[in-house]
Length: 291
Image (cartoon, rainbow, N blue to C red; front, side, top):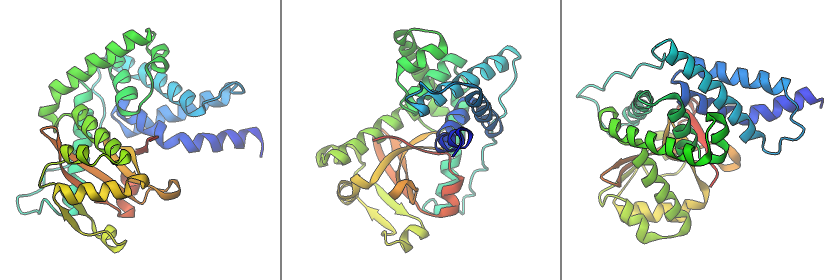
């Protein structure tokens, strides 16, 4: 394998994460693809012999490209392209139906993009990279030309602005992530008391038809049973960013086989949806996180 093929192979491994970062930064799938392509061109022109963390290096490159695009957009006072919100379901549709839940998940993801538009380019970059993709502040700081401490303040200010805008756009994505992250950590740690504290007493876990065919129950009701399930299978479930929100994925061998959407209200998880339909999985903006 020559060096060009080797670089292309390494790049493809990281492409899904890079595209997800760019999509959250720019609010447009087309612009995200352009940013990722620019990162590939820069990779081809660079000496990467001393790069130890290719994923981190590429994330930084994409972040710089996105920051430049956001600043250009702001200076021209252009509106971000973005995607349109799906139409609201009619009153006759069943909220428990998997198709309804898929539409709702898409709506929340696009609504989050609208919330992010209240941020300055530097705030948006710091918030997206740190709060959504766990990039450390010392890695973000050179991109925004600030110290790690000042970058932390950028993200903190962005977090406050997102929370302030969140209720009008489908909830608080920051609080949603905090609750889901704590829930998955409690599941991995076997802390059953913490799991129960983070679940609404009547929380449902619903599974789509494909998941049922794979052997999962169609519905589990109640915090005790839901907590027991996650405590039992936590080792196989990994945290993920799904359509810009915190979620989880079952991905044996690195291949996503099912994802979990979490609805959070009042500091507790009020509903969980498990989606295993392969067509639906391919449509998701999905990044599997370490953990």
